[in-house]
Each structure stands twice: as structure tokens, then as C-alpha cells.
Amino acid sequence: MLLCKICGSSGYSIAYEGAIRLGKFGNTSSENYVLKKCNSCGAIALPSPTQDLSSYYESESYRNEVDDGAEVRDYFKTHDSEQIRNLSITGSSIYRDKVVADIGCGGGSFLDNIRGLAKKAIAIEPSIKFREHLVNNGYVTFPYVIDALSKYENNVDIAVTFSVIEHLDDPLMTLKQIHRLLSSEGKLYLSTPNADDFMLKALPDIYPSFYYRKAHLWYFTPASLSKLLEIAGYNKIKIIPYQRFGLSNFLMWLKDGKPKGDCVSEFVSPVMNSVWKSDLEQKLICDYLYVEASRD
Ligand SMILES: [Zn+2]
Image (cartoon, rainbow, N blue to C red; front, top):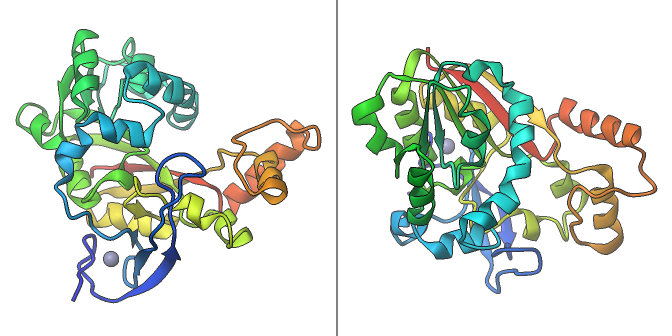
């Protein structure tokens, strides 16, 4: 009997069975993977890895699999441009004079944007190479949340963790630890891809083997993400839907069967694109989710 790592239930259904993405587009597994969806909390999981993941998270091979390289400059190349999106959700004024922790901060792109506002910026990141860079940049750093607890338990005003929980073997454990890190007025902002992404239903023959990937061990819908945070002890949980990729990306998928990112197309005006994104967000079938949650 297999128990769900999030809610402890044993009933599940098969969410997907087939090849999954190993790295970038085009690199697809030769073997089939079975993704199980918990009948109780709705979380979807890849089979649990047999290895202990901590040494993998700390390694360069993990960074190579997640991004396009293991160097800090590779991280910035991919992630610097995402920070305007994160800030558009949280705003910037909430960080003024606050103790802020970024969990899974990578090379520190997000913290670099708010360090002038924050009273203290805590960088939590398992990658040894990235931590060296973060220390040299003057951040207080820890490899894991559990390591930060002895000094900062009940002391963090704002915790952020962007595109991280889907990579963790045990997201519930980490979210519980972040909950302990937060002060009584403390808030968490989290983001992760949406498992209710309409593309999975619109392009069932070609999109799932791109969407599901070896680096992502968990997949959440708005409902299962709320449930996860509730089980982890959070309150005032608010889902904030966000569509990253534009209508042109969808049209290119239809035409060529491959991703083009948030590209510009002569067929799609900015107004049309904006309406299309808003429509997906309003229906909660957009490609990405943010959550705001309070400790108490
Ligand atoms: Zn469950």
C-alpha cells in the first residue's frame, strides 16, 4: 500500500503514463513513467527517487538538468528576467525593513532585486557553487530550511520560494519547516506550474511528454496546492493564477508541435494576447500558479 506523502491516503488514479522530458525540449525518456494522482488531496507525483536527493541537489549535474548550465551566469541568464514577474505578484513595498528568506534561491536573482529594501536577506540554497557566490555577495546563507531554523525560527517576515516545491522529494516537510521560520505576522509567497494547464487537454498527444519532466517530482492544481498549504499549517491561502506563455506559443505548438516560449507573432496583437492570458487565468487553467499564505 503506497501512502501519499502529503495527505497519507492510499487511493490513487493514474494521471499520466508515458515518456517524459529529461531536460530541454526534444530530450524525452525512452522508458515510460507512471504518474499517480492522489484521490484524496489531488497531488500528482512522479515515482519517488530511489537515491537520496540532497547530494543531487547540491551537485552541478542537477543544475545542468534544470537550467542550461551549472555556472552562476547560466542561472542569471535564465532567471534574472523572471524576477519582474515575481515582483509584479508580491509588489516591492512588503520587503521594506523586513527579514526576507528566499528558499531555493539559486544564484540569488530575486534577492538581488530586493536586498536594498530588506532589513536582512537570507539565501537558502543547496547548490555548493551557488552558495559560494551568495556568501561572496554578502548574503546569510544556509543549504536547507532546517539549517536556518536554529537562528531564525519565528523571525522571518516574508518567505518566498519560486518554482521550487515541484523539485522537492518532500514538499510538505519543507513547507512545514518554512512555517516554523515565519514570524507571527509572517507570510509565504510560493509559485509552481499549474497541473490544470489547458495545454494538457488541448494537445494531449504531444504536450504531456513535454510538460511532465524528470526534474519535477510533484504537480499541483489550484485545489491540491491549497490543500498542501493547509496541511502544512498555513492560513489565509490565496491562489493567484498567472499565464506566462502567450497565445503565439500555443499557435506555434499547434503548427509545429514544439515550444517557442513567450514569442511575438504577427498574428497576435498585444491586446489579443492580454485578453487570452486573462481568460486562462480567470478559469484557473493558466500555466502557472502563485500562492500567498499566512503563518497564522
Ligand atoms: Zn494525498
